[in-house]
Image (tube, rainbow, N blue to C red; front, side, top):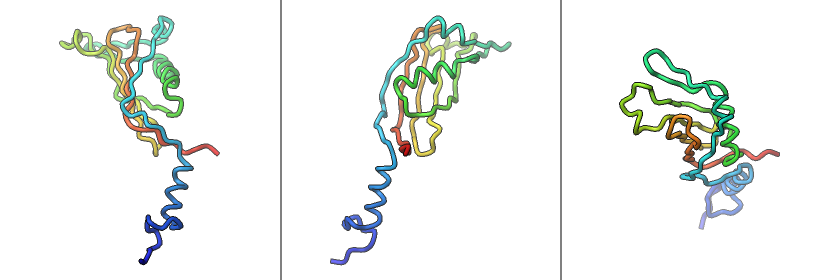
Length: 143
């Protein structure tokens, strides 16, 4: 039998060594589908400003990203999250009684990691933020 260099059946092949080396260089954790929630205190809400625009649109401003990032680190201390696609329901929305007050997302900024986070606050000034993780953690190990 001929074994080509790089053949996966050859334990001494460079590809088998590369795969093992890659595993050693990366920290991996399966968190796909994991759900959790964190609590927003009255003090947290005092630091979050809900900006309202003339046509009824609203956004969170103030320290909300710093607050959310710190709370998310309790359930996921590995990822460095960037927030995007964050929406507060409009004051004149026909869905204001059924849709969540806030919905948003975040993504790990490290290129090898595919973790995304979905966030929702059910009621205005709600106590809990529902969190759903999508994807799996893959970060280079620190030497």
